[in-house]
Amino acid sequence: MAIYLNDHLAGAGSGVSLIRRMARAHRNRHAAEPLAELAAEIAEDRDSLREFMTALDVTERWPRVAVGRLAEKAARLKFNGRLVRRSPLSDVLELEAMRLGVEGKASLWRSLRALAVTDSRLDPSAVDRLLDRAVRQEAVLEGLRVQAARRTFTTGTTVAAPGRSGRARHSLPGRAGWAS
Image (tube, rainbow, N blue to C red; front, side, top):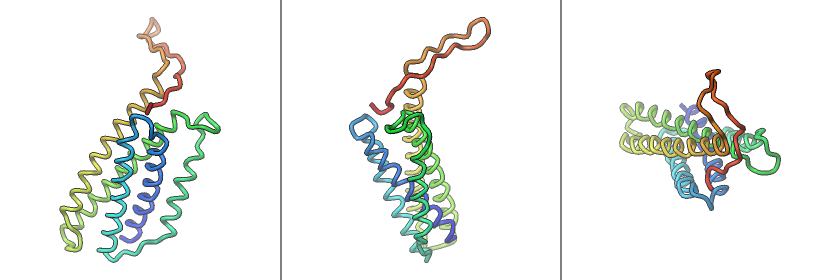
């Protein structure tokens, strides 16, 4: 249990760092408000995890948390076609990473919910609220991800109906900021 919860705590730290950075990067765009709200909620969720760990007498293992934060920072060094500025592809990849992280968090809440049936140290209704919020967060992230993918991969494109060969003709995707 200690390893499981500490691994999720490390992931939560990485997620908080990433979503806060995303919110800052898009603060003057239409996605700023939902990203800022998600950043606040995800930080609260991390705090809730810490409270559950305390209730279960699980000690935080700071080396795991530190490794998680370093992994998030290392993930920024991805090849996205740009050297010094953000690529529209970064938005798609970061939203996918956040969505997967929130999906993992929902799995954590489901596991703790199963434990809460037999362990009085956990409040089942608190876990249910966190699970409901994770499901809503997934939906918000998915909506933003779809918008980012659409703008990144279709703006400036020409997609024609299939010709005689049965294949659609495509041009190269244009550069578009998903959150402008």
